[in-house]
Image (cartoon, rainbow, N blue to C red; front, side, top):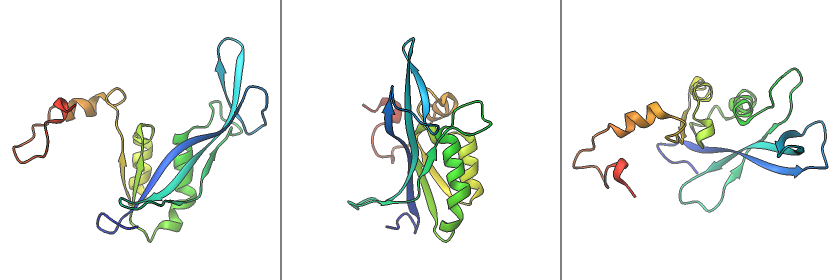
Length: 155
C-alpha cells in the first residue's frame, strides 16, 4: 500500500458512535439541542491506512475523544490527533507517512505536530475557514501547460 515515492497514506477522521438524550456516562461529551435538551455522545478519531487503487483499508489505533479532568472545554479532534501522534507515531517511525484529513485538521498546531515528526500532510482548506490561503490561491496564474481551467473558474 505504498505509493507516492514509498510513502504510506494515513487518513484521519472523527466519527460519532453513540448519541442519546437519555443515556449518558462520565465519558460522554454533550451538546445543547434547543432550549432544554442535551444530547450525550461518544466520538473517536479514526486512523486508517489507505491507498489509491486499493479496495481495502487498514485500521490503526483510534484515539477516543472524552472529557478530560481539569479541562474547562470539551475534548475535540484537534487534541485527539495531537495525542494520537504523541502516543502512536513512534511505532510507525520506519514508515514515511503522509497524513490526510479534512478542514478540521488544517490548523497550525496540527500541521506543526505532523512536521515535527518528520512527516507530511495533505489537509483540506475550506475557503471560509482559511481566507488568507484562498486569497493566495485565487491569485495564482496557471500557465498554458496546466491541466484544466483555472481553479477559480472550475465548475
